[in-house]
Each structure stands twice: as structure tokens, then as C-alpha cells.
Amino acid sequence: MHKVVSIEENLSISEFKMFQKLIYNDIGISLADHKRTLVQSRLRKWIREFELANYQELYEKIANDNSGQMLMMLVNAITTNVTSFFREESQWIYLQNNLTEIFDIKNKRIRIWSAACSSGQEPYSIIIFLKEHLKNFDEWDIKILATDISEEILLKATSGIYVKKELEGMPKNILIKYFNGYKDESFMVKDEIKQYVVFRTFNLVTGDFSIFKNNFNIVFCRNVMIYFDRQTQNQLFEQFAKLLEKKSRLFIGHSESIHQKNYTYKLVAPSIYKLN
Image (cartoon, rainbow, N blue to C red; front, side, top):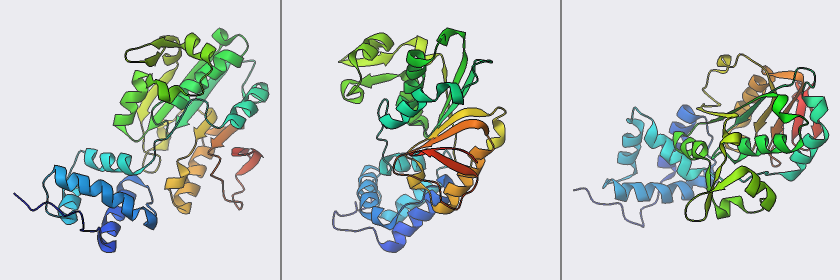
């Protein structure tokens, strides 16, 4: 049996750069140097769990995993999946005030992409919002595409099951109306909401955007750009632009922005853009 790495053995800069490169090349996520301590703590647990001798052995184990599952587990462990229902309130207020401008009232067709949807709160929030605010909701043809790179997180999203803590701030009337009680003080999104959402795995960096045959009225890509370098961000914004129409909107996170020299988009509200 190998010697388990000691708690004092630190992840060297060169070792960290190995993992940085692996994650960037395979996933597209750019790990900042200050993440080294966080990565080290996650890797130590794995070294103990797999009874490996050092970080190099763990690197080789992850790199040689053809399924890619170990790499995804590592990415999930070092990225923040903090999300909530109706996150970033000002964006929902904007949407409520601009429904008739963004959506085609005549054709009554809505297509929305929740990119990097994590555990599903965002796409479910979108449908609940539309049911609450869209006139004659049942007459509309609505589909929400919800994608994430992690199969594991999508399993939770698809289940639509959330514990009480994940529903903090949810108005009681909304909870009663659109959720069923589940076990151990958890709740499940009702099928009448789930039916509008299609969950798929998709890598925003390496994925083939040509699979999207129709344009979207809105693309939500919130709080994920922080994990990409500027070049990757710009490439992604250009890909989104090909899937938007003049009336469409792109919603990003409040801590994110499109580079001021990007002339493809015009800022219409904080963290909300339309094509120029």
C-alpha cells in the first residue's frame, strides 16, 4: 500500500499548474492562482481516499480516466454551485417590465436557454415567472433549454427536489402553488412546471453550437463567466450572438460584464444586453 500524503505536504506551484492546464484544456475553466490552497485541500482528500502516494499519481489517475468523470468531480469540488430561485431580483423586474418587447405577442412562441443551469433553480424560476406574469400563458408555445457541463448536477436539476434551505426567500404562495411536499421537509417542483424544461449536458467552451437550430428570445448565462479567461468569454459572447435576434436579451451575472470594446452588444440594463 502506498504512503498516504501527509497533511504537511503542499501542492507545489508546478503541480498546481499541471492541474490548471488539465482543467483548462479539457473543460475550458481558467483556475486563478489564488485557488491553489482550495485545490490542494480537495486533492488531499482524494489522495487519501484512493490511497495514492502523491499529487502526481492523482494527476495521472484523473488524466487517464477516459470517462472524464473524475475531472468533472474535481471541477464540481472547486467551483461554486451557489444558486437560488429568482436570483438577482432586478433582472426579474426588468423582464416583467419588458415582456411585450422581448417576446413575440403575435406568434406566442418563447425559446429560452438557461446555460450553466446548475441544479435547476434558474430554469424553474423562469417558467414560474412566466406563469405568473405572461398573459394567457397556456396559449403560448414555450420551451426552456437548460444545460450544464456536470451530469451529476443535472440529475439533481431533473429531479426538481430541493431542501428547505434551498427555498429560502421563496414566497409561500409560490411554494404552495408550484411545489409538492416531499420527504424530510423537502419539496419537489410540480410536473406542470417541469414539462417545459429540457435538461442536457453541454460544454460552453468545447460544445458544438451548430446543434442549436433556432434562435433564443433570452439566453441566461449568469455567474459562469468568472471561471473563463477574457478570450474564452469573448468567444462565448460571439457564439451567443449568433443565436439571438434583435429583440432578444442576454442575461449575465451582476459581477460580470461584456468588454467595453465589444460592439456586438449594447447594455440595456445592469448585466442585461441586446444585440447592437
